[in-house]
Image 1 (cartoon, rainbow, N blue to C red):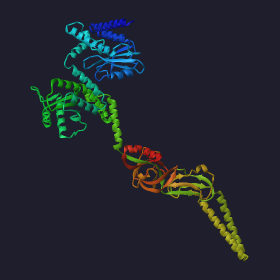
Image 2 (tube, one colour; image 1 turned 120 degrees about the vertical axis):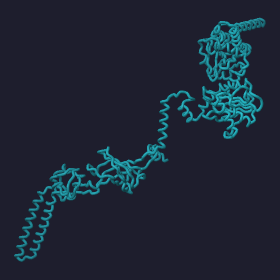
Image 3 (cartoon, one colour; image 1 turned 90 degrees about the vertical axis):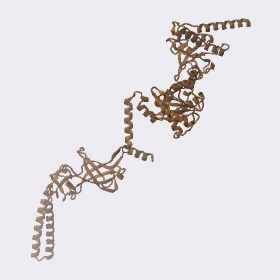
Image 4 (cartoon, helix red, strand yellow; image 1 turned 30 degrees about the vertical axis):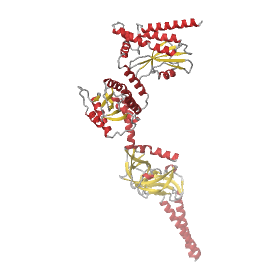
Length: 639
């Protein structure tokens, strides 16, 4: 193909494009069909693999309204690149960028003066766009929807019956009323101001902290309205606290100027409407605080606009001018900025607080909203109260100790002589009286020995008499000595016979000695047979662990319960603490003696055991619950 043919082909293609765009700008049909044909035309011209129509409202993310081809999965192909590219889609010029996976992406903003919605078209190509003058072509294609909107507005104003051409672009199935309003709005003087408000909202949304966004807002308003000073006050009911001042990083909140400015802000917040000083003729407003502040600072014009979230005032913007007055357009734009920035500022303020303030705000409910999650909030509040109570509620700290009932008078009953156990009349635990027979030893051998001793003594007496008659004095003395020896042996045998019945020396209780199972067993003189204890004079022996002995002192009170009857408690008082420790069951313990504050119960027996709790004063409940664990950790980790 020669140069003339190529030029002719190019002119023919350009004519076809102009004809196609003209047909689309004069399209008289449903909105969904228009966007379908519009995206198809762009895709065919660019030979793209897909075209997206995107929409973004103030404070909302981008979303797809339509795409070509209809079944293509274009979002999942390059989502990160799409979001990165759309960050600058508000620029006037179309943007062309390469994709990391290969290919190109073209984004262009559609001229749409509506303040609540921004439209953009994104075309994706697997290789490279081959069209000549791509950016110029994109600017021309971007004007088509606006031309179509103006035609639709003209048809609507002429009384055309097809009201579907003015529907909102965010809903392709609805009527076209919003497009008609957008076309009309493009011709109004406020369109440019609406666009600037939108840009300001987007710029503010990039600030992650509340104070940063507040300072950015004040600085932007000071430049936008040529104000000498812009201040933001935030509600801390029932007062307004000065939060940010344009081009001032630090200021004294307690100064007279700051207090006067806060008074002017509170005046606007109380009335819930914008206040402008000086007042226009015929407007009735209370502006005493504004007038006082203006006279104090020499301000020529002062405007305070409340920031409202629903029906509640969350903050106040105050603008000052040293010269000039506020125009109606400026006040209109300022009111619109207050409406668009109030809710994001309030949400960021709530999210930027420390966790305690956020928790308390969630517990109360956000700005008069009906409470939610009441059960969880109540459980959390009760849990917090219980946790705090652990540190402040005093609790009686008591020390546990093992207890044994002891008797002061403990009698040992031994075997009186060598012999055999014949009879036992008592069991362990029996009460005995003084003189009562406890047991009896076998005396049969003793009786025989007694007879033999008597016979020996009689024989020696006769031999002594015989020696005396024969005048054998030496033999007589020897015989008399043997007689005395036999008499002593007889006396010993008779004493053993008298002690063969073992009696109780005094009244008491048998606390040791089970002899009935040992009947007939041999006994050695001095072997322990029984133990008798007196119950009238008993005391309590306590075993205190060495870790707790420093908490106990003489005079400490407590109570104890015996194992047999744990439901009964008895009061005691520490009477003595041994200075040296004893090793029992691998532990070092200190023995303490306690006396009863009441009488001894009849059913008590020496040797009974139980558990005692000794009072050691009041301590915080958290200490009582954790001191053993803390002590173990300190010992283990050497803290």
